[in-house]
Image 1: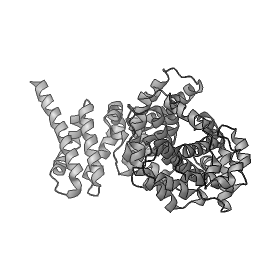
Image 2: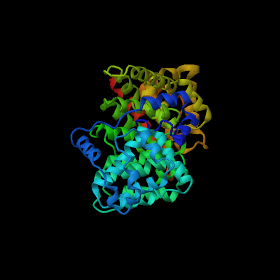
Image 3: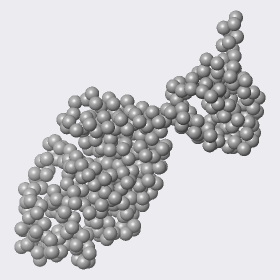
Length: 467
């Protein structure tokens, strides 16, 4: 995201304070993502050149004529440091620029918004100007931009740049804004206000850079849909990048991250890794996966959905940056470690000892195919524990359902499966569970029925073989 995050106090501090990132990792990540806006051919470049060539006539407008002589020194294509020196300490000049947005002149509005857009992206230390002026109560910033965004028939370019500027300043200096301010921005963003889909997504991402408002933003109606409606196969690299960037920012909040499974975040990332070949998109996906791995349910989904294969495949692609290969191999190694841990039979036995079973990778067909013979250890101890859970009157419904499922998998996959289960004398209990009328046993009835079918199927197969 170019140099916006370099020196951005609140956001950089948040990253370095996070349990996921050290200072060196943060600095490395920011350097890697020091990327320009995706080059858009033709019209976008021509429009920018037209805006740069425009010469505002400050003296002709009531809102700006008092400071026209000074504003003429502000040049849109001048280095950011030069413009910073002109504006810093002169809140009247900055206020005149924002007041100029009320002028019903499209060229003037485009020039002002493009000036701030390029100015802040070139040097993020320029956000300090807003910090200083807000602190001294010298700048009215929020209302002029919200009023502009609420205007009818607003040019898409103007709407996108106004939304970007408003959200970027809130994201970088959030101390001076309230929950009500943020909700007001989200309201105007998510209604039909002329912004493009990418413009809305980028503004939401800018807001999410503020840890103070992250949960408030996430809970606002429509935000999650805006982030997750991206289509990995069809959408452009810039839109994919902003989508993953937004999710990556969300992943720094543990409570939010724990709910991301409901939005199929792992599948979304896997699809992007499979179809996108834009380096900055791939790199950000790998970085996001690093933040998702510590969360058990998401980690299991990463393992179960075959994300490892998608990441490993990236190593055979041709990338411009050599270090990307190292990042791919590092992520492959981390996921492979989790695969090995989740496929560990010892983990299955540890769960059995707790007396509480829950759906997950160690109850999948893949796990059983790889570990079924290990159930012979210690005179089929694990199998006997499963039978014990079925006959225990205090066993919870979910545990009963998982136990029935696992016994069915054992019957299907072990050479002596039916015989060993018959020795446990649990068939009658399984039949009872099939006929349970308890409202909480709906899942139990289904799994008991499937288990019984597997036992009977094997019995019929044995009869066919004997015949």
